[in-house]
Image 1 (tube, helix red, strand yellow):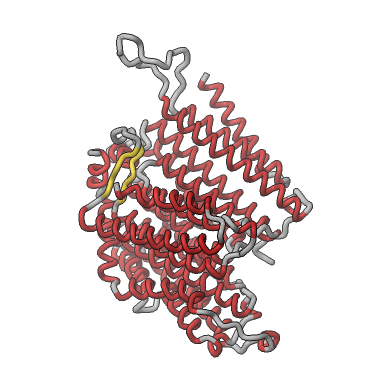
Image 2: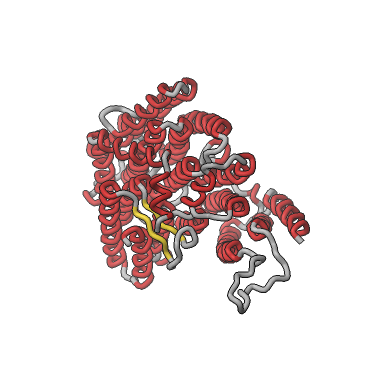
Length: 115
Length: 492
């Protein structure tokens, strides 16, 4: 399971970087989505995955030793929410930029340093 | 309990500003709020330096499981200086921020930015720091785009692109670090990594953190977002960003690379030296080629970040004390130069040096207000910058790093050159004829007040340099011997 996820993280990073380097702003935003999901999966994977174990402590009160570590899952949950907020904001800015400049092409935007 | 004040209070202010609709009420509560924040920071500062670190754990869990909030001398110093800047900028915002219906929530985002900054300074947990960085990032996105003009949106896209990639590096670093150590509490991490021999494993996370903070602090190969974006927002926003945001990155550098990424010092310190030198020189050289005050000052921010990284790389108590001293001095002086460039713009209607001039005759007060931070940045005694550079250069020579110290001294010339350039063009040369016909705009005392405040802080830092140095030295010593820090957090 871990090896599949690890490959998947790699694929997502590749796709994300590829999209990030495109000229279109929309594709750039999609790249950010890919990258942030890849990072979330990476954090999730970092603590190890333990399949097929109940999340609860059994009746005798002994702690189930094979429990998956819940902390990275909580971290990922936080990161997902933050990522969602950022993507929504980016889309809003992108809309506004298109409204002002009528272009989605990053090369059409003049370099701001030189103006 | 006082340790949570710098985080809790901005939240309260944000809630208040959600409800306030009247312009005047927003201004008044903004200024009172930042004054109260400053007094809180002063109280914390005194408490930390007289009684030792403040530490608390939120959420009812014991350390290292709960999220800890720790204020050690380093955090206390940064908190104090950033609060001074927040007060100055909130005064500056009265007359200089953009007005209008869409600007109504300016103070809301202003204080959410302050929340993110204070959170990053006080937290004792790596993931919590990531969250504060995101808070800071999102509010800065909103503030940088607040004018909705073409330039701002264009610059905003660039600013957002690189900073978002930076925060993804940060998160990936956190994931790998947790996978290797099983904790994210800084004190606990320091305890575990102190005796760690597997430096190769830790280096992967350390490199991810290096990239993340490098983008935030605008060091050499990662600084391109800064000059592309800092001159487009409203001058109040630019001043606030210029003063504090990049230094949060420097703070994170100092914290992480003294507390727990201390394996493999040969590689890391050499890397930091190379990066510091290149940052200093390239930033300084780019600054000399520009003709717009805000652009000169933006490149100049980058150049000065190099000095702080150099102090960290020297890694003796004196070097780190120098880095901290330099960062604090730079926060005050840099904000002040941006404020003055806003004042010049108010009088002349332009940021371009070619279109201004003759200000010395017209407003000698403004000239004095510019001279203070400019001389401080150039490092002329008895202002704060002289002592900051002196400590760094002394530390460099003592430890035998002649190359980097030489570069630092030479970069000082570049700094002096760009400051003299602004001085000559804006103040000494004759006003262009187009301007002479316009009516003279007088600056009120209220307009000058933020610059006076920051200038006074710079002068005070120069006069009381000895005691200031003792504070930074104490902070640096504790960073290099984190036993106290670890004990304070873990015993909670």
